[in-house]
Image (tube, rainbow, N blue to C red; front, side, top):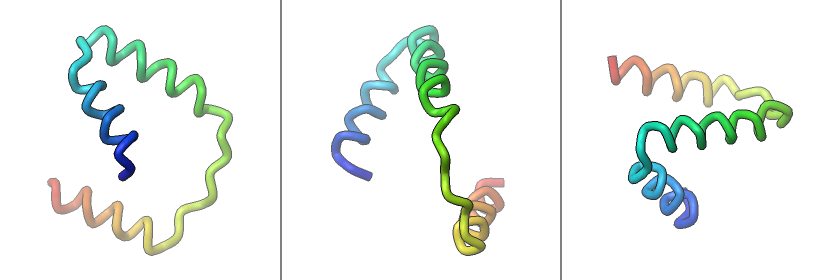
Length: 55
């Protein structure tokens, strides 16, 4: 994770709930049309493993 992303997340954590919702909605609007490459089997397994361990 880059320093800029960490800074953005730290700023996000300091926002009020209303501001967070506003920001999330705006980010979703801007990313809805992005095209992402399909996840590899390895990526899927790592994500599933992370979720499983959290449960």
